[in-house]
Amino acid sequence: MQQMRFKAYNLGNYLNLPQVQQYLTPEQKHDIRVVGTVLPFKVNQYVIDELIDWKNVPNDPIYTLTFPQKGMLLPHHYNAVSDALNSDMPKEELKTLLYEIRMELNPHPAGQLEHNVPELDGIKLTGVQHKYRETMLFFPAHGQTCHAYCTFCFRWPQFVGMDELKFAMRETELLIEYVKQHPELSDILFTGGDPMVMNTQRLSDYIEPLLDSELSHLQTIRIGTKALSYWPYRFTTDTDADELLRLFEKIVKSGRHVAIMAHFNHYNELKTEAVKEAIARIRNTGAEIRTQSPLMRNINDHPRTWAKMWKLQVKLGCIPYYMFVARDTGAQHYFSVPLHRASQIFRKAYQTVSGVARTVRGPSMSAGPGKVQVLGTAMVGNEKVFVLRFLQGRNPDWVHRPFFAKFDTDAVWLTDLVPAFGEEKFFFEEEYSFFCGNTDEPQQLSMAG
Picture 1 (cartoon, rainbow, N blue to C red):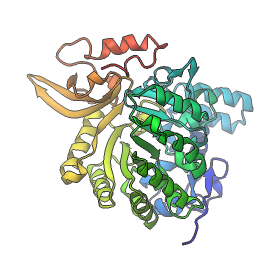
Picture 2: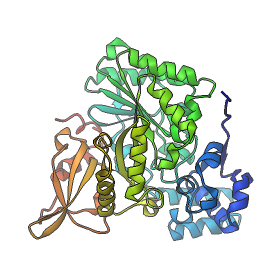
Picture 3: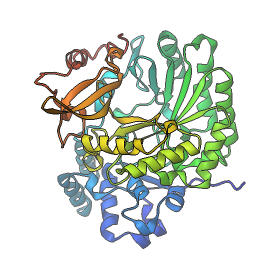
Picture 4: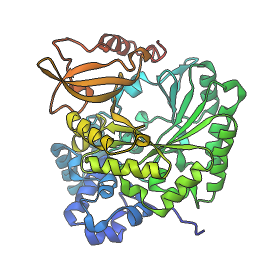
């Protein structure tokens, strides 16, 4: 089997791509330069050669997924950066301008920096988020990049050189001790960035200590990754691909469950022979693959796209898991779909698939209080309302409790909604507000119940 060499392009060298020279106008190249100066841009040869239909650019969904678009910046932000670049603004002045713009883009939504980072014996664990009782997120320091960057990425601050906004941690000992002191934890999610950019030995250094018998309460190792889409050779022909699969097998043999949380945003990402082989190899280790994606305007905002994607995922042995909503950060204004339309897209797609694909949940907002699912709209008395529920909550007691919001055609996020039936607050708001005012106790609610 021929080994493929990974080759990536960033803002400094994307103009060297023959496809860019052939298919993009000078205006489009300038747009990429402007937006890519504010938000991260990185693409690789596999995406360029195998996933993008260059004859369909700029309408190709994978092109929109990976190449910055002018509309991703608000007009006044775009104009300010464009003028700065055209006038060769001094480096320090440009750095200040970019910082100010980025801070206006809500770099850490849902209180993840203020409310999700726990402490251990007075040490803040900057590479850990523990928002929900049973599940913690871990950001290994060596996994804080990706094979390519998604234009909608809600973790864009990880990649733009703003170190004070990064999540990352090297100390495995602190991770192990934290897990040991929290027997309520059953799941750990390795995330980033993308943990699959690490070589297998580094990944193993983080994972193998978690297999200790003293941590028997930890039952599931999750790995969040876009590698199956952006670089499937990580699991097939990379130098340590076989070693990586043996690591998965070792985790399974230890009695733990391995869940690869794969990000697929469009069915075109599932069509290559490389990704099909990678999926088959992972499944042969005993690991499962669960799939998730946000619903994004200009990329996958049609029920046929989702139905086709879910059907193909099931055919390949994957488990459809989540349809998310564009988070309130970065270029949300460009990618977001109104909640009422998101609900319609989910419902129409869900209606056309069999029961084995109906494992998927959505549309879901990963907001400050928790993961809120839009179940749909309904007429209650004379009032049209959104019907919602928590799939996860900072307080587990909130989970699966239906609640109602006034119908709003423009609402794209939880904070756009107001309670229905004349209520002043949603049922969780008072407790959540109290929690947000006590930032010294980041786990106050997630440990409740």
